[in-house]
Length: 352
Ligand code: NAD
Image (tube, rainbow, N blue to C red; front, side):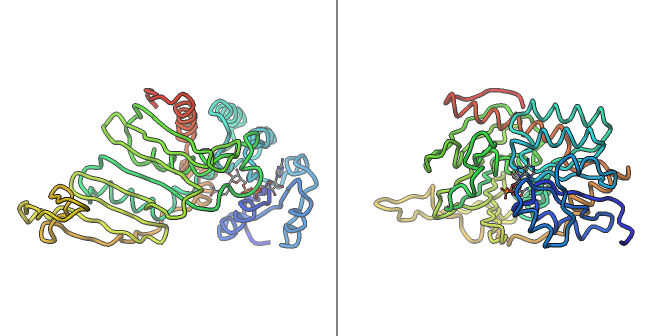
């Protein structure tokens, strides 16, 4: 064994639990200490991959060599596993959505405080390149002052798997992809939310939402449309960003897209009317070539620390957690507000 310092045990070795292996293994201070899953077949896969398997959660928590517990089970059992692991003296990383309600999350935070252990949530999409580029465009005011953004993910494959279609497991797309897009949104502005409207979709006939659209208005005037769809055979762009000086579009995770801004060196050029259907329009004519500038979507340097590097730095007292409890709680409150807005078909005016 090399000099790796912290053993991580993965609880729930399904799609995401087994993916975490790829995130943990490159980190010098971390080792995969083993795996526990309630399904034998998943344990066989873990054993075949060379990992120690534990017979029970109690066996994991009773092992003094285990430093960190990673929870990658369905959402309904995150809370009970997190609390037991913290009480056993382990640091805990939990998959998103951390809990199904904001109150449940606060219960975990309380235990983490009492036990003086670290607890964080794998909001990995804060490290996504498209999102980091959007933040860069906004902070550099490449399109002027941001006043509207649209962030959406759309697929045509329905809700995947089994438990994601069931309410009792914390299924549904608002809790699944929604938690990522809303977490990203709240990292984009410091402003408080003023109001929320939303609709959930049930096209597939499941008991949980197969998508949603929410319009969120912030106190500083920013408006955001956040949308998740699972019945979209043609996608809209991943990001649509409007500023006072231009517009940026990122079409997909391949970073295709463009930025078009007003050319500050050219006085306003009156647009020429275009034929539009059965009429003419000047209002909707494209801006003239000479009065605009076009830029490609540029890649930006990788983040200084990965999610796991940050977790290790925080254990060692050299950093603060990248994903903070207050931020996670705020996203859960926003999700609850979106559910409420959709159920009551009303505008919820609430400072979040
Ligand atoms: P999955 O169904 O593929 O895997 C879940 C695994 O947990 C299964 O192997 C199941 O047998 C096991 N399990 C269930 N109950 C358990 C228990 N009490 N103790 C131990 N093991 C148990 O689901 P998934 O897609 O891997 O999702 C797991 C978690 O990861 C969810 O919270 C999901 O939202 C999250 N997730 C996050 C991302 C991301 O990008 N951050 C992506 C996918 C999934």
